[in-house]
Image (cartoon, rainbow, N blue to C red; front, side, top):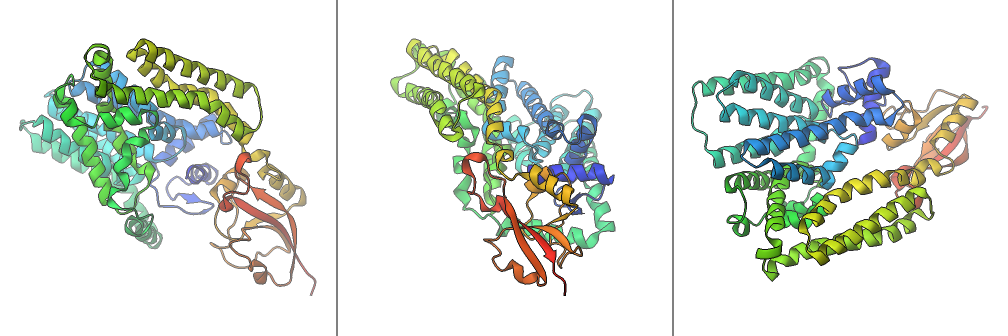
Length: 506
């Protein structure tokens, strides 16, 4: 998905086409264009060949989520220290972290909606600047719609509204309906103009895309209603505290702010319920649930830090110790597992291994001394440590180390002045790394007009492909494998056999 998004942004710059978005020079209307615009602008500023420039806007969107989440907690009456700790938990949650690192558009739509929630909260909670708050909330709602349609409106904003009015029960204020009307109309106009424009100028294609996307909700990647019930595991290293933070009957007399805890708990559970209703399910769709879940987790962590030493029963201590024993085992075992994957020793490996072993020793010390504050601090630092020191290791498993690689293919095509075609099954990763569009014969059927060209074929999926090229001699040049070096040949979708096709004289 990241490759698809980046290709669209790159073609937006190359073709100077900012409205009718494309991928591989074919229409791509599945996603509204706002994240693509932001990504293209960043690439134009920092370099069209620089992956960092494409990922920067998504990273900024994730930081915006953290900031707005922190401020919403303050509005709900949570003390600043706890709000900060819960924001750190959110930042370290698995899908939040990686959605911000990779160029996926989910992070944009949810970041704008969480900002919308903040200003909507202010609209009802405070009498000052109501028109301003209504307009800002509306524009952020529109930005979310322009990022991924109504996805976040359904999965994040609607649960927020239900929980908001259920818990805080804000009464009417003068001109309430006027401000709500301004919010609704402005948000819908801001979020729908692109779809209306595309529908007017390319109605046939947009209708096809709409039918395809809506059909996927009920016919694609179907999972049972209870598929998301292990949602708390998607918070990664916070799985056990996240699970404990959901036990209302246990925490209701123990949290520092019961009303705020109920608000975020209901927000989490309503979001989970609404997502569970939709037949199409993917783990990454749980990102909206992880946002309010971070606050309920924070309440549990706060309670544990304050009471573990003196007020916890032996049964209450079990999940706390289990959490840190698992993290200790992960920290100490990770260097061994990394070596099995990497198969080599380098400075990056030793740096990460030393850091993880030190972290494991810190967990052991904290448990021995019952320093729960230290233990949770180490837990908060764990994800940041792994990513900051582990990222250099990714270079050693990059598919560019395989032979031949995309650079070899590009150089060969340039030296021989040959056009490159892909027979079937579009591979976005290849198009992105190749640096330009690659005609796909599935989308534009027929034999290419050149007498000699390069053809990429997924031969296992299409064993009889040569029958379509009568009169051509096919000579195999190599096998292109875009799998990481430690699992070459594993994912067949990422493998193409490279053939040189030459037209024979009659």
